[in-house]
Picture: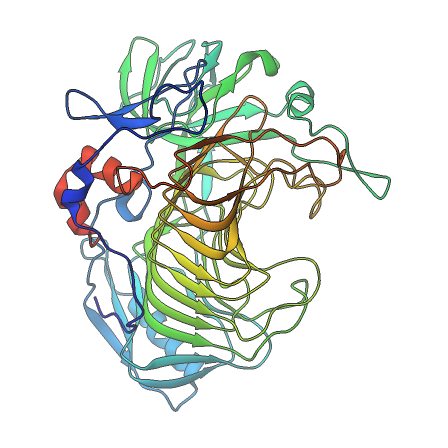
Length: 514
């Protein structure tokens, strides 16, 4: 590929991943590590009494993890100085009409120089890469807009009959469960797992009485859904990939409880690459409710990537929507000269998708979320070897996401928070469960335990915080999750890389630059 930035990224030798040792814990009633090396040389996971465990996050990223990002051949070149937005769009549209070869049509190469872009550059076909040269700058002008929008139109159609999950309890982190009937299901099928949001579960989570200035706020309703691929079938027992990031407890569900149905997914676009660009815009000291200059958005995009980008003064900079999956965002450097106004904070990276890997990204700025999950985001999702300077935070944002790994990230003047946001926003409530901060460093960590769930901070350096729910009883401090080996890093040095190495071998690490 063609990196254009020289800012430092952390790397490690793959050999270090084999040095797995027992970790200590801050809780006297926890006799052993949550992840360790077994006598057979495999990673071993300690489970909670309910059977829940830290999940395997290794399928996050392009191609499902451990896959080389391709170097797509150039099929069109654009130089600055004309009608820049129109010229780039014309080249993208031309390449979009070319035939697919091994999933790729070609790259549009932007020559060095500054392009004045007053309109979004839109990619709507598979296999198109937009690549800069050393010194390529997209200068956003005109009315606020996103610089690059890659978008499909995902549609999910049920192609089978729903069948109930028959287990009384399916733990988070597992990849197997039983259904009433596996008739009509085959290995390789995509299934949708649906779990109704019931009044009894919302009350159990303490989210049934959110009040702000005397007015009710509603946390979540409807159905929580996750798509998985069937890997094996034995009778009525299904094994799926990736593992489940949430638990399924029948006692909080109305009949028929959680269900499984075969689906067909269409309308997404794939093999989209955004590479080696600097995106700039005027400073934006505004509230985030107004139109904004943004950098890159992926909507209904799968098996794609953003890499080697610099952004300057964009707000809500990078976004992945809930219909996108298997995305790698790597080596992005984001800077800001001004903070936005108002209580609501913007996102540098927002993620609503699944199997998203954010790797070796850096940023600088205050009063913002460096990384956040959105509502109902199903893991596995990973933010790895990222470093952010300023008074911001890595913080899942709202409404019950699950399965996030924050691995070897540094926020020395800010925080990493897996928390209940209560009435903040519009009743964001419990933001996340079944998530892990691993060998991270921050000024503070707010790692809270949702009812019937868990969050972990393992090997993390920084102050442990405890807080009440915003908008609730200020005297009632919510219970914290598990803090294991506080202020002392543990092995494996990276949980994600250790899991990836175990699943796919050393070559998978080399494929992604480790």
